[in-house]
Amino acid sequence: MICCGRDHTLNLTRDGDVFTYGSGTFSAAGHGGSKEVISPMILKPLRDKRVIKIACGESHSIILTDKSDVYAWGRGFEGQLGLSKSIEVASTPQYIKTFYGKPIVQIEAGAYFSLAITKEGQLYGWGEAKMGQLGLGKQREIRTPMRIPVIDEESKQEHSVVSCSAGFGHTACITATGDLFTWGFNIYG
Image 1 (cartoon, rainbow, N blue to C red):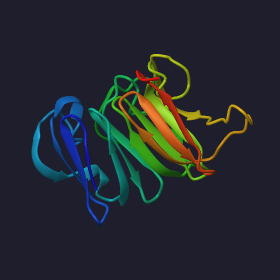
Image 2: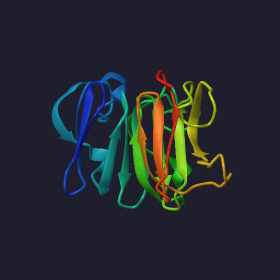
Image 3: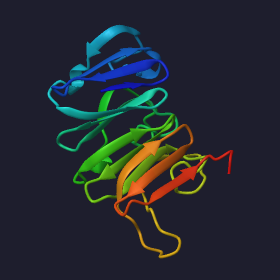
Image 4: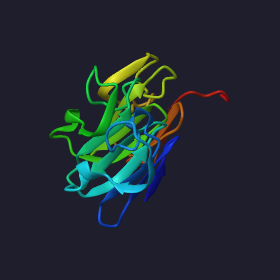
């Protein structure tokens, strides 16, 4: 699997190793510090983990392991790392503690926000929210993962989410019943 941000790239091997390269700005490559990485280098802090999914935002990245753990690094000024209310840059992969005891099955990254789905079908989001892309109202940012209830307006029932996708300023998800929900920035509608 390959994933690209604005100036960095992640490669996931069959064996679950992550190689990264690109700009050192905001530590996007994840190797510590701000040094540019010219060719793919194994991400040493994840070497003892088996990674099954990777996702890149503009200058941040998140990964999912086979143990359902989520790690993030890079730029976090808008809260897209989900690590704490104060961490704005993580130079190497850091475990997102909010998900302790909540097995994650899918991750996605928008430009300045991140998404995760739990084994139970609950959707979580964090990061920039000013365009409504987190489905939690318009606010500047949400710095740690928050549950996003996906509710049918007619039945008022909450849906279990099976898949999601993150764009620049909008989100889409598919529920277990096959319904599509979207929210966020919409210049066409």
